[in-house]
Image 1 (spheres, helix red, strand yellow):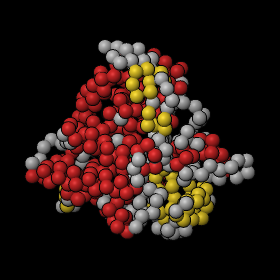
Image 2 (spheres, rainbow, N blue to C red):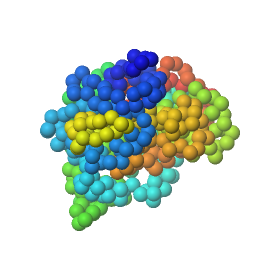
Image 3 (tube, rainbow, N blue to C red):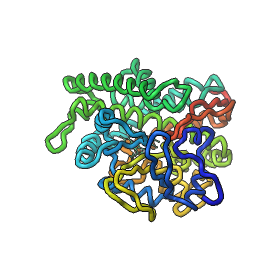
Image 4 (cartoon, rainbow, N blue to C red):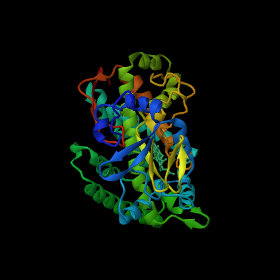
Amino acid sequence: MTTMHMADLYDAATYAHSMPHDTFTALRREKPVVWQTEPNGPGYWALMKYEDIVQVSSDNTLFSSERGGTNLEDMDEDAMALIRTILINMDPPKHTKYRKLVATGFTPKMTRQMEPHVREITKRIVDNVIAKGSCDFVTDIAAQLPLAVIAEMIGVPPEDHAKVFDWSNRLIGFDDPEYHTTPEDGRVAAMEMFMYANAMAQDRKANPRDDLVSVLMGAEVDGESMSEADFDGFFILLAVAGNETTRNLISGGMLALIEHPEQRQRLIDDPKLIDTAVEEFLRWVSPLIYFRRTLQQDAVVGGVEMQAGQKVAMYYPSGNRDESIFENGQTFDVGRSPNPHMAFGGGGPHFCLGASLARLEIRCMFEEILTRLPDMQLDGPVQRLQSNFINGIKHMPVKFTPGA
Ligand code: HEM
């Protein structure tokens, strides 16, 4: 790098105060495929440009999710065997088969069926805070929705919702001191979750109901159905993938509206913009910072030669502001169109399974907020999650005119 000292992309502290967009922008210009060292690992290639991320994401033969998982930390073989039971860490032919199986539970029909539930949940969440005139946006609003939706969809009874919430925090929060958790605690949470999911799967196999677990336990691809163990992995994936991401998107999207009052007013004056606004929230916030792949063979990405066995991380927040794709990419524009963002991944076989459900949740939540809490403002400092993986906000005090 000629003009600047490069921030350490691996160090969670780099993300403590904001997304390092200045570093991303400089890297896209000067070194779009950059080698990043790790304190306890061999280092990895970091991809900054949109096209390079698309290339890697589209090719799951050359760039494996199974070999080393989708997070940067290398694990021992026992831990690897466990995480390979999760869809996101599978390669073909296993991935192809399981993706088909679980896709039976994620159809457009399912999303349509969820809409009245999602509306009801968003309304209830706002009902709970509106008279107070202030709240913590993250814990009282944003975090409530995705968990309730996934739990409702899977069929977790209301009295167990808090457990799922706690497990997913412990699974993902070990970078952050406030959660006081360790990778070890994360593994314990995973085991507890596995056991819970297993009991549910067994129950629905015997007594099918009208929920996702029953659909998945009954589905068949090439004459094979899902085992209870397969379901356990999927349950964990849903509780993490569908929960933290959507929560942080909603918090980050709200913060963007508060910081860009003219864009919020535009959306209030013209509610038809909600669909482009949702896509812009996704591009702007990019709740997931990266996913990893491992090279199965030597390859060239962005003109750089890489070797078999090396790791590569796709930095979605950087791809989402790549100036060769997005005009005025550093501008937040609720009417942006086209907007081919990569918040749900760079396309290809692992593209986010829950994208349409997430879009539905985000749209319903902002429609509710913009009509009932239109003057929301910050009421204290925003506290970010310290993580190199999730672009998250832990606490965001807000105030608004109390309503009925
Ligand atoms: C704003 C919200 C969300 C964001 C930003 C997001 C992002 C992503 C990304 C980037 C991937 C690609 C992983 C890869 O390439 O290795 C992914 C995969 C996945 N997402 Fe999402 N997601 C969101 C919401 C959801 C929801 C609500 C669900 C389910 C209820 C969900 C379920 C999944 C699953 C199951 C996969 C794995 C697909 C596979 O490996 O074939 N996501 N998501």
